[in-house]
Length: 486
Ligand code: NAP
Image 1 (cartoon, rainbow, N blue to C red):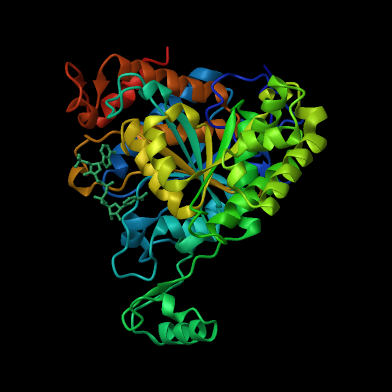
Image 2 (spheres, rainbow, N blue to C red):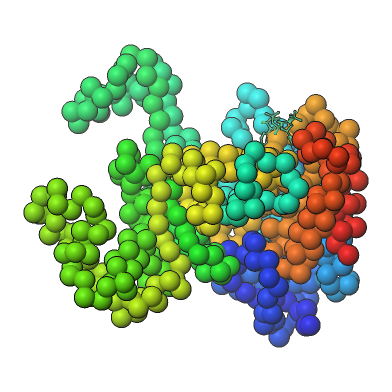
């Protein structure tokens, strides 16, 4: 296999467990820097410089173990023809102690220039100007997707009965929503001004306790939604996923969360018409598949059981929808052709939080807003072993910037004890390798992780929940993963 510089589309690479035979570009890349060959096209040399932040607290133990695993996977997969050149940059407590700054400009510049990197957990500065270093990096580099894969490794303790059904990927919007940080304190002049403005609009009485209310602003835009949903659909297509679920609270917040849903569907239809079918369209076409003579009205009645209770205007709108779908995509999607398309559907956030537990199989790729995604990601992580093992990455699929990261914190009480689970950073490294297109190395990490855990070789967090398991240190768990790569 030729291993020269590898040019390919970067949208959605994680969990493509099957190795793919891709075409390698002819021109060998001499330099070690990853570059872009146009929007979304990474050019990866055989010895790329990747940026890393070791992390605070348990970060040093975890990085020592995880980086050994990542390097071993590359070595075993490519026999020395590929190798990561690690470049350490500082952030968090280590940066503050050495430079007086929590997030030095050099660190931001390095992530910007070298495109791809990985970071351990960072101490959140208390009382400093920066709310969170993670949020700051996401905003500065416009890393609009927080990618959180959720899949179960056999043997990992779990609170659910059928963990093998859990295998989905969450695309959480990372730059908008109430996380934009536009909030005003109770009693502040800004709140008073806002109340005055709301008075002018005739809605001030909706603020139940105006004298003491704090207020926040929730921006959700069409562009922000479109780029996130596009990444999710592209990922689903690239990785042979069956569905994309838009998770929202549009029933309550019609313009923000409802906008996310509507813009998401619109983007799906305008950009991916031939590759997708919406769930509602699939019902209409499915009804016709079962009964080709079904009238438009009967079809409308079948998809909306409350049809007979609707006003005539509502009934007409529904009939128009049915007729419109048949006319627009009957030829391309009818006769069961829709079954080969990616289904785009939506779910209300509270129900989705329940159904990831009770009907895990129905979720495949999830696209959601910032706050919903925050809750959903950690709740989902609990299904498959918790934050000690859940990986994540923040991505901009256009500029190519990608920062894989631990999803847990610094767990300071365990710092220096060589005790905690390095799994979150190991699997974040696996995501990073897959993002580079180094699927063979990524596959070895999955193999090694499966091998270690399924033979009961685990760190304290799994050990305390697993009868008969062998307790390993953080470093020993790394060695066990490497051993099981063979
Ligand atoms: P935490 O560091 O995530 O630790 C909470 C608990 O999670 C630990 O006590 C431990 O549970 C478990 N845990 C964490 N990492 C683990 C690992 N690698 N393996 C196994 N179990 C692990 O949360 P925190 O104590 O609330 O926060 C500590 C600091 O981290 C704060 O400064 C916070 O701001 C920061 N933080 C950073 C990030 C980030 O950089 N991504 C994220 C969250 C928090 P047991 O006690 O049950 O063993």
